[in-house]
Amino acid sequence: MSGDINIRSGRYFIARTVATCWCCRASTRLIAVALPPEHETLAMDADAGPEELVHDTWQEASCNAFLFYIDYLSDDVQKQLSKISSFYRFDFNTATSGTYWANHCERCGAILDDHDLFCEPGGAFLPTAHSSAAAIELLRVEKPIEAGAAGYACEPEFFASMEGSEAPWPSIF
Image 1 (cartoon, one colour):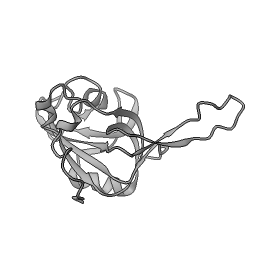
Image 2 (cartoon, helix red, strand yellow):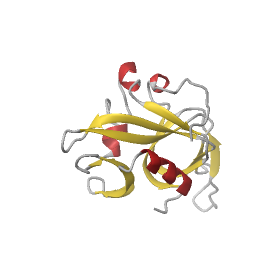
Image 3 (cartoon, rainbow, N blue to C red):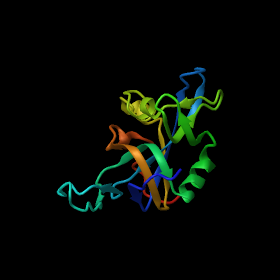
Image 4 (cartoon, one colour):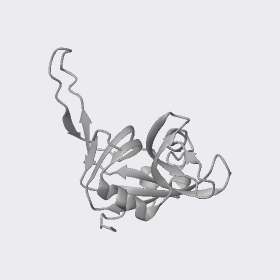
């Protein structure tokens, strides 16, 4: 679990929803990590030539975002997530041949691929209507986060319809 950090923020969301397991067809609870505006992403210096020393820079993002294919989470974030779900854990996915923090079915234990949850329209965290977005609850965590993520969905559609997205920012943890 030693990926490179490419995302950081002074606060974050834990998104919660329910979906159907692809394997056993049972309903299962899912969680995800989301970020508010003003989080930072690590960007490579695009102006550096091949012989130049490349300096990474932190850039502030002005959008909400979901993280997925997360290969690193700081210890404090891991503890917060484990309070919410023991079915979100670091695991190897044979379908992607990758190891990352993933949701698992509460009933059969099958890993639920992040591509299906975050990249497919109608996926648990890629709603296609305000009504399905309203089924996603956003819990605010007023603590810092550092993460390494290969997936980053900037300003997901219907984010404002997710429960808790418009409420003031009081800490729940």
